[in-house]
Length: 308
Figure 1 (cartoon, rainbow, N blue to C red):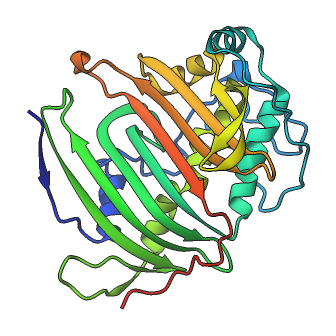
Figure 2 (figure 1 turned 30 degrees about the vertical axis):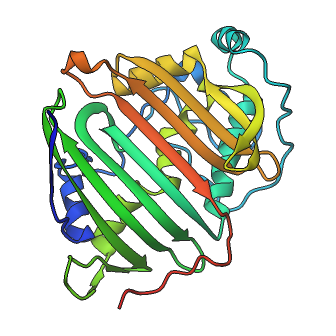
Figure 3 (figure 1 turned 90 degrees about the vertical axis):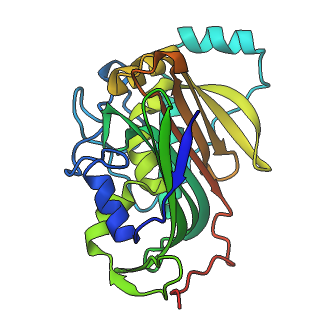
C-alpha cells in the first residue's frame, strides 16, 4: 500500500534549494545542463531564431516580441488509424516547427495568464537522470512590468515501485525580487528572492516550454483542429521520430505519447502533454511526464499583491 505522509512544506526559498540538490526533483545546480535535441529532427524554421546544433545542450533563445504569421491550415480530423500511420511516415514538417516555436514566443509576450504545470520522473534541467519525484504548480503569472507570481507549489517523492512516499504543498507570492512563502500559522514575511529566481524560472511555463517542448518541435505532426478549454485550436501529436528523440534524451523505455494545442486565432500555446508510461511492475525506473495548461491570456482581472 502506498503510504503518503503529509509534510508541512518549508518556505519556497528552502524548497527550491532542496530541488537544486536533488531531494525533490534532482535538479542540476548548473542552469546550462538540459535536454539534448535530436539532430535527426533538426529543421531550420523560416524565422531568424537559431536551430539547436546537433548534439548541443543549448535551447533556443526566445525573442521577447513576435511577428504574426500564417496559422497552419487545419484539415478535418482523419481517423485515428490514419493519423497514426501518417505521423509515423511523414518527415519533419517545417511549418509545424515554426508554429510551435512562435507559440512559445507568444506565451513569453503575454502580459499575464493563469497556468498549471506538472513535471514527473525527470528534472527539467537533467532529463537523462530518472527521479522518483514529481512537481506541480498552479496559479497566476504577470510578466509586465515586472515578474509577479501567485501560485501553489506541490512536490511529491515516491519510492521506485510506489511502496511509500510523501508530499507537500506551499503557497507563495513573488513580486520582483521579493517573495512571501509563509508557514502554516505564521504571518507572511517578505524575503529576498534572488537566490531562487533562476531555479524558479525553469519551472514556470516559459522555462518548461523552452527546455522540454521547443527543442523537440520537429518531432510533432499536424493532426487537425478542435477545441482546448473552449478555444479553437490546432492539434499536433508526437511522431514516431519524436518519440525516439525524447526517449534518447530521457532514457525512458516505455510507451510514448505527446500532444500540443495551439490557438487558431493568435497562435498561442494553450496546452502540452508529453509522457512516457512505464509499467508499474518494472519497479526499476520512473516514467516521465510534462503537462502544461495556459488559460485566461491577458485577463485584466489577474492582479497579484503582496501577502499581508
